[in-house]
Every structure is written in structure tokens, then in C-alpha cells.
Amino acid sequence: MIKKLISLFHVASVIVLTSCSNTPSVYNMADFGVKPNTDEDVAPLVEKAIEKIKSERKSNEPITIVFPKGTYNFYPENSAKKEYFISNHDQDNPKQVGLPFEGINNITVDGEGSDFIFHGRMLPLSIVGDTACTFKNFSVDFKNPHIAQVKVLTNDTVNHVITYEVAPWVEYELKDSTLYVKGIGWEHNPQWGIAFEGDTKRLVYRSSDIGLGTRKAVEVSPRVIQAPWNNNRLIPGTVVAMRGYGRPTPGVFITHSKDIELDNVKIHYAEGMGLLAQMSENLTLDGFSVCLRDESDPRYFTTQADATHFSACKGKIISKNGLYEGMMDDAINVHGTYLKVLKRVNPTTVIAGYMHPQAYGFEWGRSGDSVQFVNSATMELIDGNTVVKAIRPYDKETIQGAKQYEIEFASAIDPMITEEGVFGIENL
Image (spheres, rainbow, N blue to C red):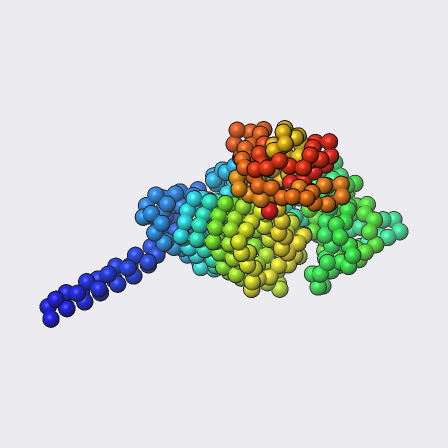
């Protein structure tokens, strides 16, 4: 009987210890001085807290990081500075990051319904080299978006002059009769815009991107501007989201990560995509939205470009229970990136490069990857796929920032593939 009791005690002990080992350790950001509902810049405190948590945790121990519900302000001046080359975005560096999660596994970040408010030009959330992580229950927004919203008051279609009112949150000035919008660390003259019906917030039918009347402008009364502008579709009451060409950062950046979930996360504004994921595997967006705050939100726009964008990802990409609205481009975009053959070195080796200014600097492929060649002039595939034997950056010492690669294949490629033609390489 005693032996049986001892055995039962051992079994119970194992069960208790096993249960304890699977219970996440909880870190409250308030314990690191990160407090909500103040004007204080929490960016440097958040960065320090993340690094401290990473150093304290046991190896791969499941942990939960909690932001007590409230509003948190992030400013660029003292935020984390990171060099990221982000697909389909401007390759200006460094990026100023509010929530940098790099090289961390098996964590849950719970905002408990918090609003993360960003200022200036920032990358709100980066998920870099992470595995098995969940981010949930928070929203991302900017205090002063880089898109300027105006409302058409009058449209003189005979003299081609429009009078419009600038939304109350927009910071602007007229310089040499040209409208400039501005904020912390940025200023630009908007050149293009998207027109919305004032009463429905729907796009004006068949309007696409429109040119703007921002030059030879006169302020006829506070926040009311008159300028030459010829567009008879812009009837009084139409709202125009005026924007520039900048696309520095998405709201969420994911790279070289696996098994990532975003649950009940809302992006209300970003100066690029709402979410950009590249070279990552198995991504789940459940209740992830790029959306206005609610029906009473005075804004008509959300992101500068796509709501979600997946470049060179694999595995399962799941988007469910979300809402994508008000963005300046696609809801969901999934693609890879071609390299152009710049030089045929020998029958098995080429020099190839990225050709778009918003697509370079990040990893393109690895040894063992299957690829195919495309004749860009006709969009026809060249017969016979091949496998990458070795790939190395050609114009840089490292992949980071590289535009060109030397690629050696496991077998000889078609003799017609040379720099004399226009051939692309697609990673399958």
C-alpha cells in the first residue's frame, strides 16, 4: 500500500510539474514603466522591456506580454532604429520601430484592447525571425496621418476652380501658393488622391487616382483653400484623400518568421501596407482588419497602399473574420519577385538582379530552391525548370541591401538565356 501511495504521489508530481511548465509566464508592461493614458513616449521603454524579457526568460518558455488596456503613444526620436529592406516599400533606412520583436519564440502579446498611437514616420510593429507567436487585442493608428483629407465645397466647372476645406486634424501650410501637409519629421506636397462620396464613403465611380489642385492655391478663409482644379466629378460634398508618393513602412512587418497569428488586431492607418509579410511561413489573420474606427469616424481612408501583402511566403496564409476598407489599393496581394538575368557567366551560372526601386535588399532564394525562367517579352516560360545549387550576393558582401545575386544552378540552363534578351527568374 505504501509503495502504491508513493507511486501515485510520483505520478501526481509529474502531472503538476508538467502543467506548470506549460503555463505561460506573464509579464505586465506596467511593471517596466510602460503606462497607458499619458502623453509620455513609451517607445524606448517598450524596447528596453522587450530586451529584458528576452534575457530573463528560460529557453523557449511560453510567455505572455500584457499591455494594460489604454492608449499608448510612440514617438520616433527615441524609438528602435532598424535596417529593414521591406518588399514593395521605400528602401530608406533606418526604420524607426515602435514595437520591435526580433528573434523571439513562443510568445503571446496581448494589448487587452489598447490603442497604439504613433507619431511622425514610424514602423509600428516588426516581427522578425520569430516562431510560434501571437499578437492580439490592439489597434494601430497615427495621430497625424500623412494622407490629407479635404472636402469639396464648390466646383466651378466653367473656370475650372475648386474650393475645398481641409480636415481639422491636418497640419498644413501654403508656401509659394502651393499646399504642403506636414508632421513630425515629414512634409510633402500631395500630387494624387482618391475621391470618396461624401455621404456613403464609397469611391467615386470610375474615378481611380486623380490629379489634385494644390498649386496656385489661395486660402480664402481659415482651412478653406481655392485652387485651379479641373474635375467635374468632384461635386460639392465629395471627400478627397490627398496623398504623396512616400511608402516607407507598413503597419505590421513580418519577415523570416513562422507560425505567426494576429488576432483581433486593427490597423486604422499606415503610410504603406496595413501588413507586409515576406519570406515567412504559416500566417493566420483572425479578426485582423484594416478599417475605420467605426461609422462615426470622420476619416474616409485607411492605408496608403494594400491592406495585406504577402511576398515570397509559403505554407498556409489564412485571413478570416476581418474587414478591409478605405485602403488605397488591394485587400489581399500574394506574389513573389522576379530577378532579371543581367549576365550569363557560364552554362550553369548567371548574374541576376532586382529591378524595382521598392523591391531589393531582401533574400530572394536559397540552395535547393526550384526556379523557372520566363521570356519577359512574350511572358512565355522557357522549357525545363532547374534547381539552385548556390546563391550569393554579387554587389554586396551580405544579402542585406543586395540588388544582385550570382546564382549557380544544378544543371545547364537553356542557351537562349543570356543578357542579350530579357529574361526573368521566378522562384517556385
